[in-house]
Image (cartoon, rainbow, N blue to C red; front, side, top):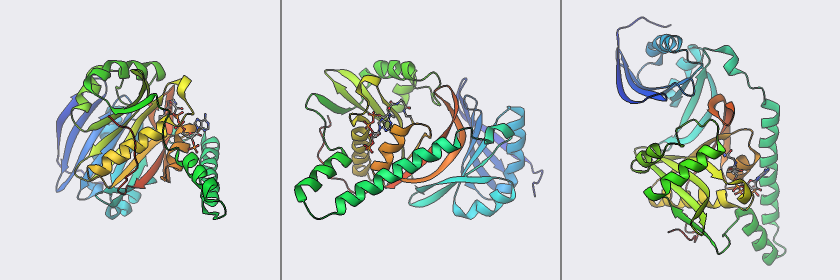
Length: 325
Ligand SMILES: CC(C)(COP(=O)(O)OP(=O)(O)OC[C@H]1O[C@@H](n2cnc3c(N)ncnc32)[C@H](O)[C@@H]1OP(=O)(O)O)[C@@H](O)C(=O)NCCC(=O)NCCS
């Protein structure tokens, strides 16, 4: 039952045209809201107390701000009341809360936003990824020819890059070229990666950006958005320039990010990736990530709203040798 309780809304941070981060307090219950205008969604994080106390306020905010989707990140304890309030679980992020799973629930104030036009196609992409992983696993298990097995292992893990390619962690001087690449590739992107100022700000705080380059030209990029409290990171912003695709660059960058995260004591990583992109789903599947759900029309990317798949991995100490500068 929703209650009309007195509440406090306190704006903590704002990026004009993109989002407002707000602390909401209703009675004894608290949550952090991101009112994300660009993606027409409200994200509810760090929920403490009773969800039913805040669900009425969320409905009002969604109506006033003309928001199409409300997403709640919640621990196991809140599942029942989220369901009671009409929210549906779209997936889980394993290990998100310092090892404990996060359940991602959604509600769609704009009914049409909750319908995916591409479900069949997206399901087939997942099936193909999982089939490839199973076949690769079976081939690895055959004990007959150790040399052949080693070659298959290298192919499936895609170890190493050609000599002239270099992996590095991005520095401030790279921000301008990075912004240009994101601008060229994406008409819409959920965060303002086309803005050099945004890249510089996030580089200086909680985001690790890694690049693959050849003779000083950036060919591929990926990042890890770190939550140092929970030791969990989101791997995101993956892009390889069209002429360099299919050479294993994005997989090498993801592996490099995982190694860096492990060194920093991070225990898990996950991604929310475009459900209609065979390449990005194949990359995470073949690197040992588990498919744990799909967030319908979750954000504006490419040409409009798209479904995002969740892939998760518990990180272990990785001692693989890579050239990172
Ligand atoms: C998705 C993207 C980043 C992949 O980068 P990449 O460097 O070409 O990827 P890799 O060469 O490391 O390949 C990764 C996996 O995808 C597979 N793959 C690559 N392109 C593919 C395609 N067009 N169709 C099917 N599989 C493909 C590779 O075979 C590999 O799988 P495997 O390990 O099972 O062999 C790149 O295509 C891209 O930049 N796309 C546009 C931007 C985008 O949509 N980014 C994703 C945001 S979530």
